Structure formats: C-alpha cells, structure tokens
Image 1 (cartoon, rainbow, N blue to C red):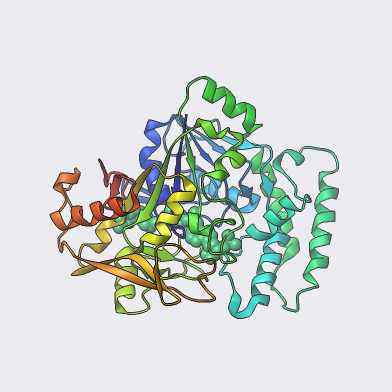
Image 2: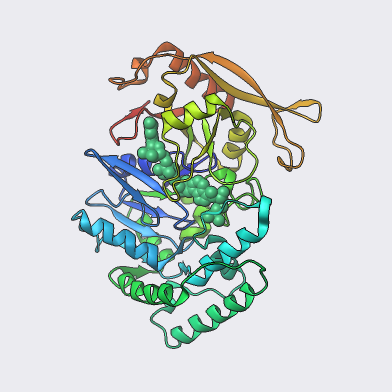
Length: 422
Ligand code: GDP
Ligand code: IMO
Ligand code: MG
C-alpha cells in the first residue's frame, strides 16, 4: 500500500526530513512530481544533505527509490546530485530507478523560464528558474523529450528541433537573458551519460509488481499543496499537481492503493517567491521567525517570507489532499516566543469566512487570529507528546481539533532523530 507525504503550505515544510525519518518503515520511496525546484534537507550524524530530484529515502541502505514519471528531470542538476552522493560513499546505483516517461528539462527550458519571469516585471512568480514551467508546458503541449527517448534513433535531431523552437520562442520576449547555451548543451549531453548508470522502468509495471508483493511505498511530494497548479494560489504556483491527485498520475498507481496521506505543516508558515500570503509578518516578529527557523531557501538561498500558521488555508489543503494525519514541524522554532498566533478565519469584503476566496491577490483577506501563550523553554529531551510543555500541547491540540485531523508526528529539530510519534 501507499503512504503519501506532502506539504500542506507553500513548500519547505520539512518533507525531506520526514521522508528520511519514516523511510525505515517502507520498502520503496518514490517522488511523484516537481523537479529540481525542490530542495529537501536531511540532517543526520551531524551532516546536512540537500536533495533536489533524488528521493529522500536514498540514505536508507536497503531502500529502493524511484523517480516517477510525474517528475521533470534536468540531467545537469541530476548528475550534480549523483556526484555529491558518490562523494559520501553511498552505494545507490542498484537502488535508484528512473521512470522511462520522466520528461527532461532542456537548457533552453531554463532560458525560457528566465525570459518569462523577467518579462513579468512586478507580477513575477518568483520561479526558482530551473525550467519547470516550460518543461511541463512542453509535456502537456506534447513536444517533450523523455528519458526513454534518449536511447531511441533520432534523439539528437528531436533535441535540436525542440531547442530551435525554443530559440524562436525566446525572440518573442523583449528581455535579454545571459546564458552560455553551447556550454550548457555540452554539459547536458555529458550528463545524459550519468542517467545510464540507473535502471529505467515503466513505473506502471514496476509498482504493480511491488504492490502485488505487498511492499510498502512512500510517495514523496515536492513543493506544497498551496503551490498546486489546480488548487493553489494561481498563477503564483508551480506547474504540477503537488497534492494527492499527482500521486496517481505521477507514479501510475490506482487511487485505492493509497492508504494514508501525511500532510505536513510548519508550526508557523513560510513562502518563498511571489504571491499572496495572508498571515505574512513583514515586521520584527517575521524577522524573528526567519532567524529562529533559518528560513532561507534550500535551492535558491532566498530569504523565505514568514508568518503565523493559517488554518483556513490548511483546512483547504487538507480537504483537497485527503490528509488523514498531520505532521507539525519546526515547533522548536517557537520556543522563545511569548505569544503565538493562529489564524482561524479571514475577514473578506466586510464578512467573516473560513473559506479561501477565488483570488487572494485582487482583494486581500485579513486574517483573524487566536492568541496562545508561548512555552518559553527548550524542547530538548522531549521524546513523547506528554514530555512537551503544557502550552505546546495546547497549541497542537487546538490545530488538530480545528482541522479535524490528528497530529501524529511532531518534529522538534532538523535532525532525523528529533521526531515525536504520537
Ligand atoms: P522540504 O523542502 O519540505 O524538504 O523542506 P526544506 O528542507 O526546504 O526546509 C526545511 C528546513 O527546516 C531545513 O533546513 C530542515 O533541515 C529544517 N527542519 C526540518 N524540520 C525541522 C524542525 O522540526 N526543526 C527545525 N528547527 N528545523 C527543521
Ligand atoms: P520544496 O519541495 C518552496 C515556488 C517558487 C515560486 C513558485 C514557482 O523544497 O518544498 P517554479 O520554480 O516551480 O516555477 O516556482 O513555486 N517553489 C517552491 N517554494 N519550496 C519548493 O520546493 C518550491 N518549488 C517551487 O519559489 O514561488
Ligand atoms: Mg525545500
């Protein structure tokens, strides 16, 4: 059966940490969407590892890992990731599988991403500029190149045709993007060789067999529910279905094989890039959260926007992702706060509502908060829910009661061992 782990906010909820910590309970970890826009951080034995395309189960020595066909893969960033893992001495060649139908990000996809963003001026999405949007556009536009195509006759020609089309499209933009295309192309073709180290599979047969054998599968999401192309704060979203629907299409598994959906939220909220963020704190408190939480992007290094936890947005995400249990991360970041706020509703066009309006940007909502006393102490040594300070337990209970989904995991630090199961 399949357990899904996904973010319920705007990304960076701590998915990498949770997937790594849970992976001993699973036979296989599979990424189902997104690409190297993701940055998933794992911390263990005093070391930090950031994964972009490779699933966060890779450090579990006996685990198999699959990059599902819902992912878009940039051979260059993938090769870099492989090289970094090689340096750790990890043996993973026989444990990492690539779906044949994974779409490839071309160097010109990154160029198009940069040109599109630059042309948007103040309406910038704040893309990671990894070529995600243009690559998914070519996928749905039926022009894309897939991993399975690399070995087929005529691949080079197909590549060149698509590249030339991209170069034509670039002329539509008035902006100039600085880019050494020939150098990037050379790297890209070299990096395709690295893909050959790993087995490619048709994930439908591959996963059907695993499920038939009774293996347990953990589906690892990237980004977060509020960045979902259909349900998120469009157009300030990414280009894939980040929520549970993406598991079926991105791995090729039937919905009834999904048993659990673990939705992750920080104990507060962050967003990196543009777009509406109702509970954002553009003041000293926001700055304190950023500092205490080390809120700087794992992929781009950009400072993350910070604010209080937003229950209406979370409730929406819980609804469309079918979350069956919650994980609260970075609860330790609130240790020094005298007061902790929770948005429980919005004031919108003069009325109170717990629903997200159609567009959060055009007419902004004003969050309505409930306030909680902080616990003002370290959580070191807390190994069970009962060990947590009473005010911390009260905050957690309030969140789960409001969302009507139980909090089963509480993360109290970046290290993989800092996890309370309840
Ligand atoms: P992901 O994209 O969802 O995997 O999250 P990121 O790795 O981008 O960002 C989460 C950041 O918070 C990383 O630096 C993690 O090491 C760190 N982190 C994860 N869980 C916790 C936690 O419970 N407490 C603290 N203090 N840091 C955490
Ligand atoms: P993980 O998996 C946080 C954001 C970007 C931008 C928008 C579109 O680490 O949680 P894109 O590059 O997809 O065109 O960017 O989505 N974004 C993320 N924010 N975490 C991520 O991944 C993100 N991936 C994309 O900042 O606002
Ligand atoms: Mg991240």
